[in-house]
Image 1 (cartoon, rainbow, N blue to C red):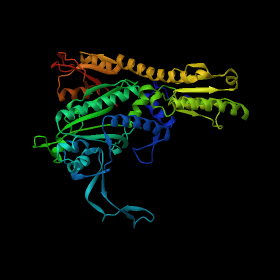
Image 2: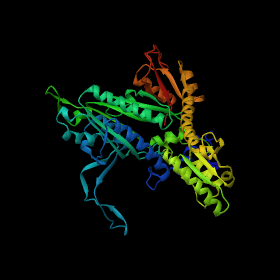
Image 3: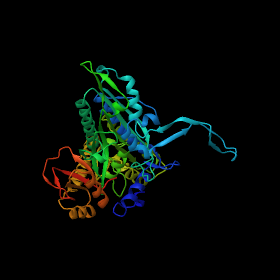
Image 4: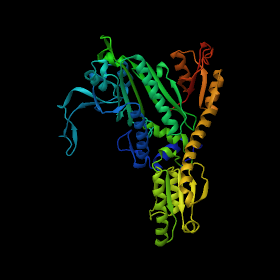
Amino acid sequence: MSKNLTSRAEDYSKWYNELVVKADLAENSAVRGCMVIKPYGYAIWEKMQAELDRMFKETGHQNAYFPLFVPKSLFEAEEKNAEGFAKECAVVTHYRLQNDPDNEGKLRVDPEAKLEEELVVRPTSEAIIWSTYKGWIQSYRDLPILVNQWANVVRWEMRTRLFLRTAEFLWQEGHTAHATKDEAWEETRLINGIYAKFAENFMAIPVIQGLKTESERFAGAEETMCIEALMQDGKALQAGTSHFLGQNFAKAFDVKFTNKEGKQDYVWATSWGVSTRLMGALIMTHSDDKGLVLPPNLAPYQVVIVPIYKNGEQFDAISEVADEIISDLKERNISVKFDKRDTLRPGAKFAQHELQGVPLRIAIGPKDLEDETVEVARRDTFTKETVILDRINVVVEDLLEEIQESLFTKALNYRDTHITEVDDFEEFKKVLKNKSGFISAHWDGTAETEQKIKELTKATIRCIPIDNKKESGECVLTGNPSSQRVLFAKAY
């Protein structure tokens, strides 16, 4: 299986595409630009959902659900938001099909069934949600509203790539309403911090928290915070965003409240989201030429047990031991799969679980039963060790923790050695070509310079790190004064 994978060095893009399909994560569908997320891939997404959902609820957020369709008049109410998404919108114009009189057995859109107002298939939900909030908010007593929804969105894409860019994708989107600017800004920072914590503690991906430049902000936001990660090929990937919307949507939808002083004011807002793009980040950060490498905290099953036997009697004896191991590991909240399929040889099973990134594999054969031992193999390092049965629970628990930490450390070392300070534009281009990664360089703060660098190099400003130190310097392109460095990179 993994032998058929293109190597990363040969063609990173092809390696990624092949791995997604061969590891049974997702595949292209009959609908152009859309994907089918297969059970194994969806199991990873479900684990992501569960952890994020828990983190949101621990900070007081509640889940709700809003319509998939947004009337065009609502969508265009906030002009910047509408303009920013207009070219990506799928639009419903009719409400009925009919038999085609010119083609027997075929259907056509009923020309008499045109909608009075077109419906936009949501690319994001600010418009429908803020038109709803108008009926929910009258007084400061109704605030804050801390709502999240798990949903799908549609953003029309011509060039698609599984998980990274598809016409329809899954995500969560939070939409909160606050009485003050400070509360809304604190919410924006809180959520960005949750995203960073999730990426590092569960995905084992180190991220940089920062602010987007004006040209890279979410359409309709006053500020956009983000977490930026670095993939193995040296390209950056925006893994999550949290937006401070100010009062823009409240003004667009006339959402006012009576404050504690008895005066009318517009509500302050945030929105924030991560999507199935995180699956792409997970794959590209850790995986290798043998296949998927999953951090234990997000693996659908953390341990697989493979029996090696020649007859039914041996299988029954191995199964009895395996059942005891499974019971003990489950008590420690470790997920286990006993692969007792009789349609594959052990070697084929090893190859499949290696390709699918199962963190630990336990092999049990007749000789192991005699010695009261098992063989434990790590997916990340391919190392094997013989473990006494009485110690298997402790060893497995320790190894899973070690693998989680090791994957993070490896990714962190790669990221940190691929942040390069540059003060000269020729050096800037040389680093991009030969080393890639993040480039820390001075920028004069103008959109014109930002656009010019993008045109010349295809590198964009990924973020202005929130822990940036102020440092006087000269813009890497124009030589104009600059107060701080920003991070550039080529990106997905």
